[in-house]
Image (tube, rainbow, N blue to C red; front, side, top):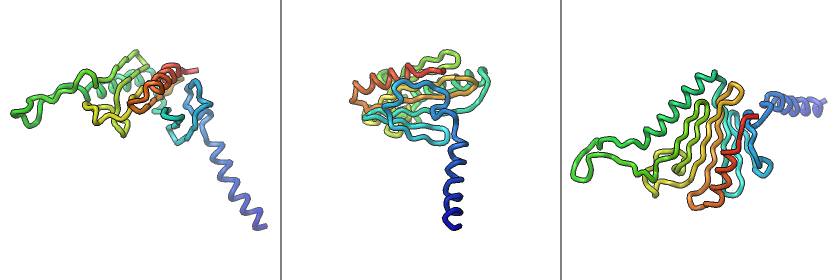
Length: 178
């Protein structure tokens, strides 16, 4: 009797976890070469890793096409704003303006319900670094509106690994809505 109760309390939570999992662990995105990666799935994010390549796939939310376009426009403006010249809060002998060099500014392509960003990121995988000593990775980011949901795929590769950068760029670029 004790063994039966133990098994019931052990198996029921596992069955519940399996039944409540999304039908796809990649939030409706077709990702090429997925079978080669080690996958860790969270609530709204899956992280895939292989050698020096880290791919993050996530779910932002269900929304209309117009809402998705507005969200992506805001994201584009936010990223662009990180690299905009601004007045120095303490002007003086050195500089009156804070400037980010062109080589640090990411490539941004906004096309309706799709946003592509390629550039350098910090060790915490955030945009905005304007100095090579602050950069750790090359990032390839794509936001897509798929079947009423806004989702993203992000590829990160260490700065000095050009071969893996090309692979990550191809994976992010080839990812599509089924």
